Image 1 (tube, rainbow, N blue to C red):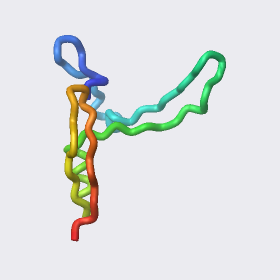
Image 2 (cartoon, one colour):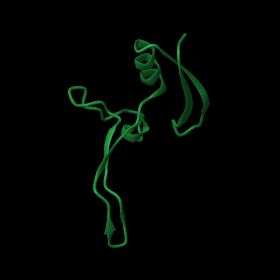
Image 3 (cartoon, rainbow, N blue to C red):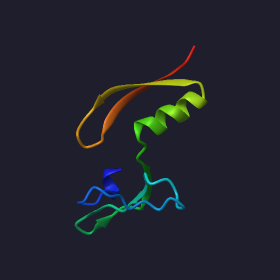
Image 4 (cartoon, helix red, strand yellow):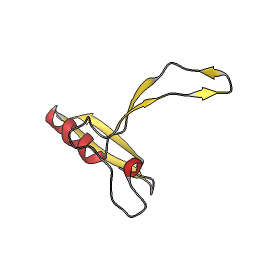
Length: 77
């Protein structure tokens, strides 16, 4: 959620809009531009919850102060 966090700690999220982690990237290097592509940032709680609904288990392996994480997902037996 850090993408939408204001300096005072409040957040600008449209609760009636799409999931706040849905991003469209437009990359450019000098005069080279790529075709815009979709990217999805999912917080671990949402990721784990949806995975569980579909028979998977998630384990957070690592996380940092920038809200990034590395997770392991495997099929629950």
